[in-house]
Image (cartoon, rainbow, N blue to C red; front, side, top):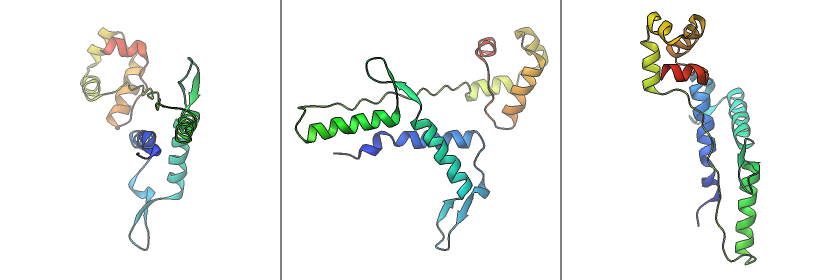
Length: 155
């Protein structure tokens, strides 16, 4: 039998990736202990814990069309396992809904936007300030918020 936590470890990974992509973590956020171990500083550790907590408490369609947080889903799966081990149930199945990662950026889209000229923008009917904002964030390595209406025009 494998560790139950492995079924939910990806939530931690997603949380770290979200902080990295949001440029929330920098080299100075790490500290080196007297034993030469590298650790997160207190402030960034709190930020990471907050992000993990937020992701664990996000609601997803789980049973009977109802929305539950991953925290509740994990508890339910553990209860089912306990019932199976105590022979109250003959079988069980872990059910873990997929997290919806709404990504509106990828390498191709980034390059397309960064290479877009002012004339291209005008032809697509994209507002000058909106285009400037998106392009600025992309050039700084940030993930810009691109509304669906604009996304449809760009793609």
